[in-house]
Length: 78
Image (cartoon, rainbow, N blue to C red; front, side):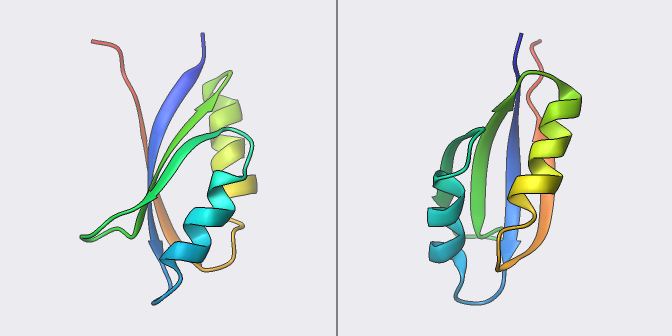
């Protein structure tokens, strides 16, 4: 069963559009949207396991130029 998470992202000033476009092209990213508020971009990501999700965030999402901080919230089934 796949693990999904919302990744809330802060970017450098004026970089939200470029970050959003780059993330939309990344494997494991289901959606990426620029938003208003304390975060600039919100990503829905999915991976086969929690470990793979962590690798996706660290190795793919956090390496996009213009990202300054991420906050990952795994989805739980209640």
